[in-house]
Image (cartoon, rainbow, N blue to C red; front, side, top):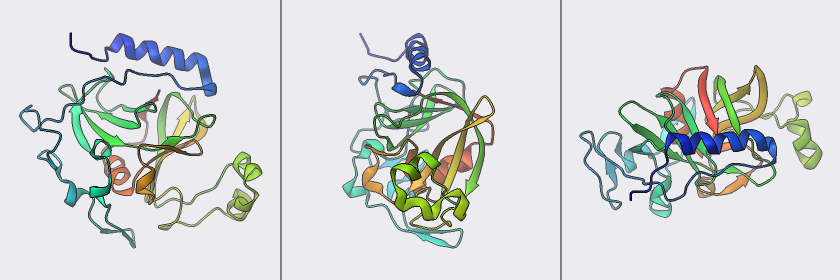
Length: 236
């Protein structure tokens, strides 16, 4: 029998997550099918380096000027191609336009029509710092400032120079929020967690950050351009 992630199973995982709160993350099945398809629904082989609906990986991840900054090219030959942007069958059952972050498998899905989703590879927060639940993207920022929460400054005093009282870190290639940031709010309150870019391409597919969901800079730009404010988001 084909292994799939049903909507009932997905919602069951989400319910468990809501009960756990910030203590941990629910799991979704790691054996769900990941099938890249072309514009006509024809499967692409895992070795294919071009998704016709999106363009070549070389073009997606090339160096580019953006907002006065020169983003370096991503060395895609050094990356696990599972974490490069691609179109897959939607495993979530969520409504089109919803963002779904699968913290277990290190993927972010943007659900589309016709049972498809755009999948991005992400890096997530280390155990103990991860956030999960249903929320919305309250707003978005182009080349944002970074202001570490007071709790992070308390753990890492060297970050005090970037605290809110000191005006935060100015935008730039070394800013931890990268080229774009999407701010997650739940019940009208800032969760302090973000979807954001990162220059550290080697961290994608790993649990390394202090709670936020990090993307390749080229990928967060793509997602930023596709979703409006108030987009629903599910983190499981």
